[in-house]
Image (cartoon, rainbow, N blue to C red):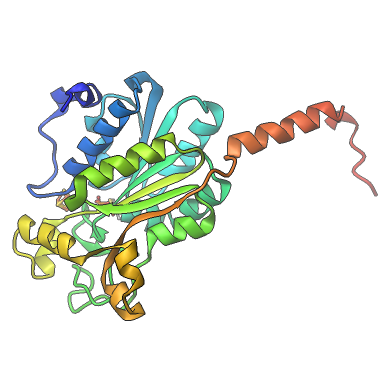
Amino acid sequence: MSRAYTRFLLGKALPHFWCPGCGNGIVLAAIARALAAAGLSPTEVVVVTGIGCWGKADDYLNVNAFHGTHGRALPIATGIKVNRPELTVLALMGDGDCATIGGNHLLHAARRNVGVKAIVVNNFNYGMTGGQYSSTTPGGKATSTSPFGNPEEGLDIARVAEAAGANYVARSTVYHAAQVEAYIREAISAPGFGLVEVASTCPTYFGRLNGMRTATDMMKWLRDVAASLNAARDLSEEERRRRIVIGKFCDRRAPDFNQRYEAIRRVARESGFNPGVVNIGR
Ligand SMILES: Cc1ncc(C[n+]2csc(CCOP(=O)(O)OP(=O)(O)O)c2C)c(N)n1
Ligand code: SF4
């Protein structure tokens, strides 16, 4: 394999701070490979992160970076993309960042179809702060704040993004690393809002609290719990809820926010509209 992707990695920042067996490194390498495959240079790329273990990813990428506040990566990324549409803007978020604290921003970034690409690492808990449950923790699973099982059902990030209007949505797992890279590559080249959700390992908290004693056990769980979209069609609703459905949920070509906004600006300019003489009516 070509080593071109290493130009996107900040070697001097390594070794990274993630626990042994954490899935974050697999996603980080997939992003670097996808950026290289897209023929981009580091100066053409911006990553925006929030907080959390995955939110540290910008430390290790040799691109422009904005480390924002928890839950707010998407509005920051939106501002950058709207002003500099020629840049590839990635929002790197954990499930707590993207779908729990920042859930509202996810809805509206997808609805606006702004050309940001969200790479969401879903490890089903808040890793950095000690393994509390998040909005994606599956019903019944143990976390440090639900030691006898989560009474809530987990949110399906990919389905939410698809329903809200994202052009490109796909989900995979860190067990399926080649698929993760392929989906990130596709999301980067598709117009409009793209979201790639990656179910990942957090052996330190989620794994340990749910009977998976090693990182390998957690990897095997991801392998076994994953069901392709095709296979999932034959499952009962009940069974589907217990599985992680992987695949490409949508790949639309609807105009993105920037295209629609530019079209409206053109119409406004050609109309001769002068805001200085607006009659606001009485
Ligand atoms: C507004 C706000 N609320 C809470 C926190 C504390 N906090 C920091 S990281 C984190 C959890 C991160 O979880 P997730 O986004 O899933 O990322 P992970 O650590 O699992 O990669 C929380 C709650 C914060 N920094 N800011
Ligand atoms: S706490 Fe979990 S998510 Fe955070 S670095 Fe460790 S394994 Fe990864």
